Length: 479
Image (cartoon, rainbow, N blue to C red):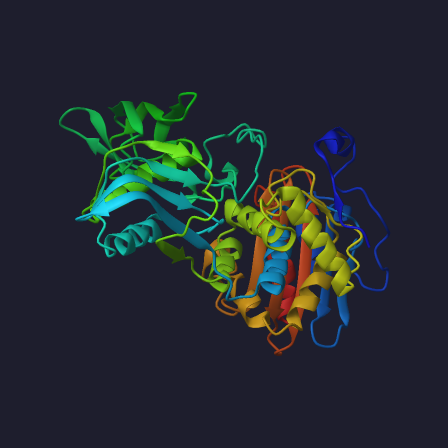
């Protein structure tokens, strides 16, 4: 078994191949369920554009085996592999440490020098957690930092990164690069409120970052609250420290929000730390700099992350791309040694698959999150991975990390029919021309099934893929 990584140079070759290129013919003895065929026919979608593998997770009996050996783009269902390997290699109780160092004398709560933060890849160091970090630091008696905030993010080596390379949307949250001191996913939420008296629009920023400038050119228009981004155009300068909002905002909107990335990783960390430090009664006089931690230095405090078992729930239920990539880099750093790299993470996963005897010959990994046009896996191999996971002692943590049908995560508004609510734990995946689901479903009879559906076809992400998936889930639930 060889887990293949497709380098960027192969993108041209892939673009010449249809997404539905067939590796083998379907098993003629296990037909595609009639409800699925009906949806495909209604939407004029060819049956050979979808791969499905369904099996009883206890007995192994195969229920559906349709184009199951065809490698297809799995989109975000690939996160199921990254999180599974992380659970097995690192353990559900694994925690990241963010270390705090002081360089200088501390007298009467004043640090006459610099404060250093060293990150090790905590994927969920969100605003509330940074506030808690600064609160814990204030409890040491420190109040005034008469120097700079030093940042050590050398635990990961990300290398050159273009956030717009995937889809030319560099400000979108899903395109954020990994970083060893990732704070709040490097994302800002902007809230827009119409000011009818002036004809303008108020913009509130969460979290409040003093080093982020807002250029507000929005005006009101007489209209109902609708339209793409409510008519708001978003642009950033080259360093992403000034955001410009322009356009005509509907005056019948009460409030509207957009989330976009801002600043560099280090500038964002400085801005958020400074804001939370002040919120906890502290003060800082300097700027920031990126430096390695001096050898032999001892931290005055270590801030521990939430356990991995909780983190993977954020990854799978809500399909958080940068968190999945943080896991990949962490695997590299922990197993192969720091700094963690994307290539190292892929190597760890390849070695893990080999050690477990999983025959995932169809696998072509990219970044561990599925945000790639190059990733490939077959439905049969995805099903085999999930069947393996079902028999592991950490299965409950893994199962609980997936979205519950009709209840939460990316399935909150799907499969909401009363008899289907809560009956399936699934990971969804969607890219342009890609629709996928994989996970587990309990049928009306009580049998538990593992299923993988990978659909690659032009415009299949525009709702048609979900219709196919729902037809299969409903049919399977009645067994």
